[in-house]
Length: 87
Image 1 (cartoon, rainbow, N blue to C red):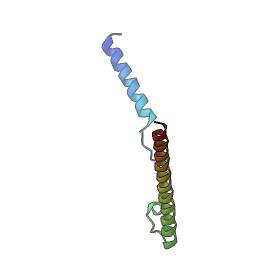
Image 2 (spheres, rainbow, N blue to C red; image 1 turned 45 degrees about the vertical axis):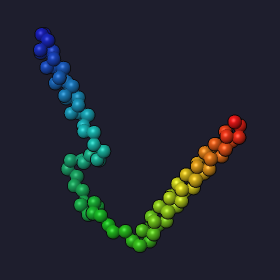
Image 3 (cartoon, one colour; image 1 turned 180 degrees about the horizontal axis):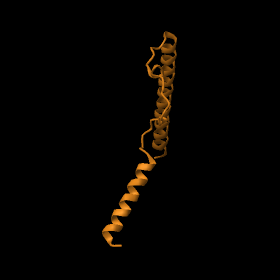
Image 4 (cartoon, one colour; image 1 turned 135 degrees about the vertical axis):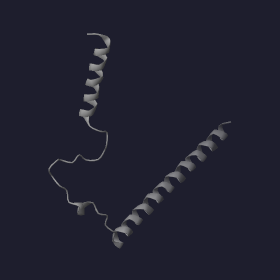
């Protein structure tokens, strides 16, 4: 077997392996023969209570982040004062 034939065989095997592995998509694979209902994929408008719950959750998250930032800044300030007092 010469080098050219060996190279073609190796390329064909690698190509077959890459096609057999499938694509690198995160979408779920559809099973052939089974039809999905398109009504499951339609977007639905949120109710007022759902919007309020989401808003409350975002406000809590923002408050937590703000509190963490303030604490971090206070710690830095305290450390700088301590370092200045040592000198």
